[in-house]
Amino acid sequence: MTRRVGVVGTGMLGLAVALRLVERGFEVTAYNRTMSKAAPVEAAGGRVADTPAEAAAYSDVVVTVVRDAEAVRAVSFGQGGILSGCGGKTVVADMSTIAPSDSVSIYRRFAEERIPWLDTPVMGGPDAAAEGRLVVMVGGDKEAYQSVEDMYAALSEKRYYLGEAGTAHSIKLCMNLQIAMLAVSISEGVCLAQGLGVSPETFLNVLNSTYFGTGMSRKKAYRMIQEKYPATFTLDNLAKDLDTIHEAALDAGLNLEAATGVLDMYKKARKLGLGGLDYTGILEYVQKQARGG
Ligand SMILES: NC(=O)c1ccc[n+]([C@@H]2O[C@H](COP(=O)([O-])OP(=O)(O)OC[C@H]3O[C@@H](n4cnc5c(N)ncnc54)[C@H](OP(=O)(O)O)[C@@H]3O)[C@@H](O)[C@H]2O)c1
Image: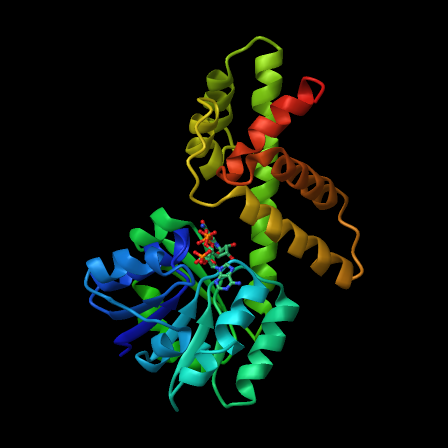
């Protein structure tokens, strides 16, 4: 049974993960580069570490939940990094969204030290983590995963072991492409409804009574039409993921036209200062462009 968990990165998702694990009785040691953001974990009954190495030293499994591959490498291999704190049986897992190629190279670097490293990206944000409703995709050593599956069970409704290192991040990129496109699709539908002088709420109600309704159109879309975009997953981070998707597609010799176009939209939205909004704030960009920029 996994008892001691390190959580490195207590941003929006990492904090919710750490607090859920404390609530479920795990001994959680959290680290965050900006230390104040880890304080709620201590307040809830966990511990705060001064370095990722310290979080690893206290843990059976240490999970990184940071922005990108560069950040995963910094907290893993930098000074005071996870690698220097791992004991003989520590499992390291990453929940950030990064490229499969980065996943494989980080896996290999840990493997040189005989430390199992898993890619465990998730679907669902902070609310899903808080309620144990995440969907977890897993790549890497199966036995290492099975040794910590009870920890993932506390966070998730569904878990998919997918195979070797990098496979989980490959599926995750396909998933985030859906998120980005769905948000644009709903935004343009709302914008068209407004332009044609019909109620965007009626558009959503009709959409949601059909086969084409989605979780996004049933939930976040109603906040979008009220121009409310409280961030649970920022537009900035989704633009980062679209960059990763674009590069992964190019590496695979693929030209994904719509993905390239959508990436361009999110990049422009970020330039307009919308990066701190929830990703559904892409509606603001769509509306601005639709009216001539
Ligand atoms: N939010 C979601 O719904 C969601 C869902 C699935 C996957 N994800 C993925 O999970 C990861 C975290 O997302 P989030 O929403 O929690 O993002 P966030 O709120 O922006 O948090 C980013 C975290 O990364 C840390 N960080 C960034 N650069 C770093 C570096 N160079 N060294 C060390 N730490 C660094 C930040 O530390 P500071 O506080 O010091 O800046 C912070 O803890 C991302 O890869 C995201 O794509 C998010």
